[in-house]
Length: 292
Image (cartoon, rainbow, N blue to C red; front, side):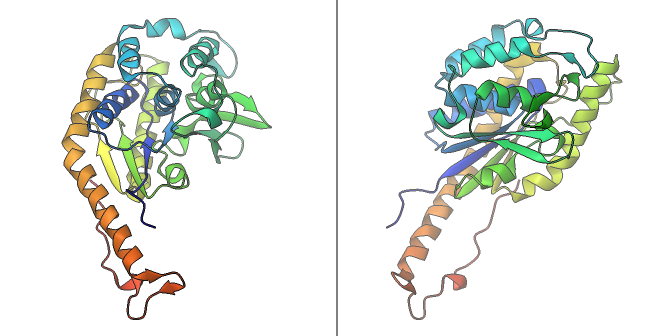
């Protein structure tokens, strides 16, 4: 039986304020009726994925992002392990996710974090949304790490800023990555927090070069001169996300069409007991993957 269309997993990358561009991307996908079957998110990508899949309307989430006083969400303190305890953010995420568990979100969401003790990627698939998001946004030195099940969790962007591998494991036919990482910024940092954020940007950019190669398509949002902590530029970031999605729309549709035809060809050349005589799926032409 041929499925009507390929299923798509969207890998939403981290980038602080630039991650709000995901709202613009999702707006275009909804408007153009592009399928959103699975979402994998890192850092701000995790925030957007969770809020969206919990049932939050994009109109409301966009207005909230543009109008909220972001500085009030950051409860500064001076502990040994980080400047921000993150309790206020937990409360907001709990509200946005409507107190749902990860396994209750629709479309399904996986959220990535990093175990600081082992360096391993940790993927949250079930459990409290606010815990997973809080771990995923924990920029080392800025947010205090999250202790969970014997692990010390920090930002997922340390090992997977764009969670393509996690998205691939969700069972989709296609993985489309949304990369909101920053380009080189020649302006010098003004304080040690900006040094930490700039360091994370550089690390994320280097990691992305290898990770996004495994995606079937990479949407690159061109968000120039917006720092990780510049949430007052929310409207600019959302607009850039929308522009990026519109720019890549022909490639998204072409990819869907190609994958659909491939599925039909495989079905026609395969019988109930395997490949039909003279009809080997291995002989099919390789499908060209879009990587830019």
